[in-house]
Image 1: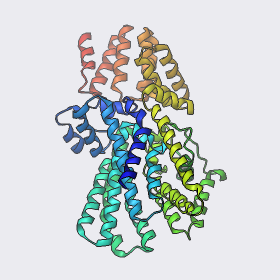
Image 2 (image 1 turned 60 degrees about the vertical axis):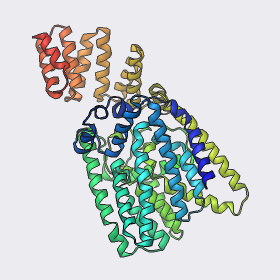
Image 3 (image 1 turned 180 degrees about the horizontal axis):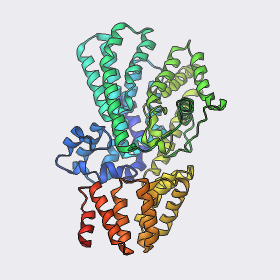
Image 4 (image 1 turned 135 degrees about the horizontal axis):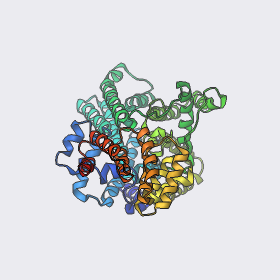
Length: 502
């Protein structure tokens, strides 16, 4: 068993080796590189006991606070931690499946450790929250099962404590109490009243932390913007597409993207309902195969927060994301690997095929990990798979501008505005480019549009004021600097600008 564990760890390390050379990308800039909470002496207090941070994944943010004191702005340490956590999660999954006597438990752990769809959760430092939430969700399940079998209270307390830590890492595991009941129903053929009562505190914790997560996302990330305006029926139809999308990526993990195309669901179209109908038919066909049915139900239950019924800020770009399936796909992986293990008893070629699958998945992860090495590679890869990803165009423009490629950056910003005319950040960035060129009238036009779309952007007001100064509109500039100072009281630049004009 120790030898098998070492093989899993070594293979995972090799597959994710390119990530060790990775820089801070995407949200890593905000969560780590420019995060004042990590650097301040009272950072931990603000992380745990204020609403200043954009989400309340306090345990995950605390891990960054601790690591900042170990390696600061050196990304290698953060990447190593993520890969270690992925190895531990795979080993815990192996332990859980063995306890449940699921065939092919080790194969499932290998597939989970090496599957390319999980690269986004491992190579992207900011998704530490996925890794930590699973790190505590798996012991929650193990401790709950041990309590169920022994009725010893310390195991119940351990399960509840581990679940609280999982939720404090990321609220994505809010549906775990339902999964616990489904596992009992599969294993024991029934769920006792005592088991239902025992899960009440788990449901209460999940409800509270789910509400907290939604409040933070709504007030910080969504911030009053319309994420999606489709009807409940359209969302219900879309849920079927989303569920099958992740199963498809599990079976055939190609053409991956940070931002997938944003589908349009028409509730009045029969075709829109076909995936949901297929899910229902599959569940009916599996009703006599309890293990397979529970695997599908657990998958759907764990995926429920990301099926589109709740507005999540990222859904403004896409309805699906690889990291949303990190936990949810585990039951499907376990079910598929169990089926392969049963077939191996009949056909000798199955073990060889399993080894080939592990090798292909590991190579796919190795290739995908390269994409997350730097910002430019990440966004160019995204645009290769999804040329309409307007946020990727804008972010690539930011990278090019930081490297001094002003014309190339301007082209990306213009493409962003063409794809998403109401995206205020792109207008703001175009204004910056125009300002650098000395094209102050055009900069004013772009900054005014940015202010119209994002009236609470202190940066847009401040830069609009700076552009107005350059064309001699001093009074208008003073008004903009005052607005910027009011929106960002702790930011000194607007006040400095005002002082120079007085």
